[in-house]
Length: 249
Ligand code: NAP
Image 1 (tube, helix red, strand yellow):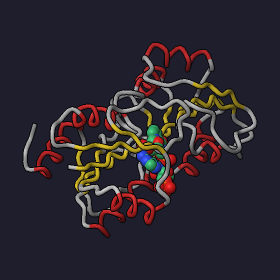
Image 2 (tube, protein in one colour):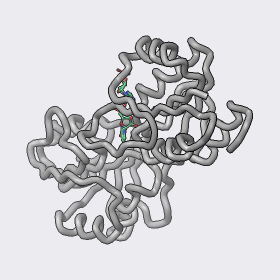
Image 3 (cartoon, helix red, strand yellow):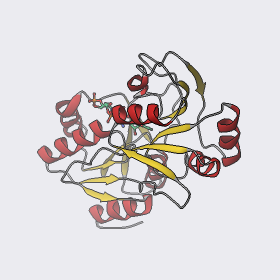
Image 4 (cartoon, protein in one colour):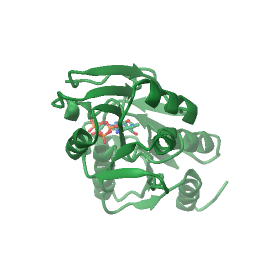
C-alpha cells in the first residue's frame, strides 16, 4: 500500500521505522526541508514543498499514493490543510497524527493566547527578560518589542527581523529539567513563551518554569481541517494504517 507520511516530527520517524520494515507497505516520508541537518526517517524520503494543494494533488496522483498520514508538527497548519484539500479531491483516506496538547499542572502560571501577535503583547506585559522558545519560525512577531531582552532558542537561525535586544542560542532538544532550570537562572528569565507543541521532547522548560514560579505564555495550536481521522499516538496511527490495508503486521 503506497503511503505518504508527511513528517518532520519524532512520531513520523517512529511510524516510518515501523512501516518500512513491514511487508505490503511502500512508504515515502516527506520533509519540508527547513532544517539544515534533519534527522532522516527510515525508508524512502523526499524533501521540499509540493507547490500548494495543486502540487500535492498532482504528486499524490503521479506517485499512486493510496493513503496519507499527516504526522507533521501541530503548528504546521498549512501543510495539514493542503493535505486535507488534496485527499478530498482524490478521495484518499487521511489520518492526522496529533500528539496531545500540554495541560497545566498545579503551580503552573500559564497564559493561553491564540497566536503569535497575542503572545508578543502578553509577554511584554509579564516581563522584561523573555525566553522565546517557539522555534525559528514566528520570531518576527516579537521584532517590535524594543523594551524587553530575549533569549531566542532554535535549531537553526530564524529568518527575518529579530527583536533588537537578544541572544540567539542554537540548540536541538530534548533538554533536561536541570539544564532548563540553569538556563532560566543564568539568563535571569522572567517569562517563558512557547507553542503548545505537546509531547515529552521539549516539556522540561515547563517543569523548570513551574519550579521557578515563572509565567508561561502558551500559544494555542491552529485548528485541524475537517475531514480526516484524528489520532494521538503512533500506535493508533499504525492500527489505522493496518485497517486501511485490512491486515495487520
Ligand atoms: P506549514 O507552515 O504547515 O507549511 C508551509 C509549507 O511548507 C507548506 O505549504 C509546504 O509547501 C511545505 N511543507 C510543510 N511540511 C511539509 C512536509 N512535511 N513535506 C513537504 N512540504 C512541507 O509548515 P511549517 O510549520 O513550516 O513546518 C515545516 C515542517 O517542519 C513540517 O514538516 C513540520 O512537521 C516541521 N516542524 C514544524 C514545527 C513548527 O513549529 N511549525 C516544529 C517542528 C517541526 P508547499 O505548499 O510548497 O507544498
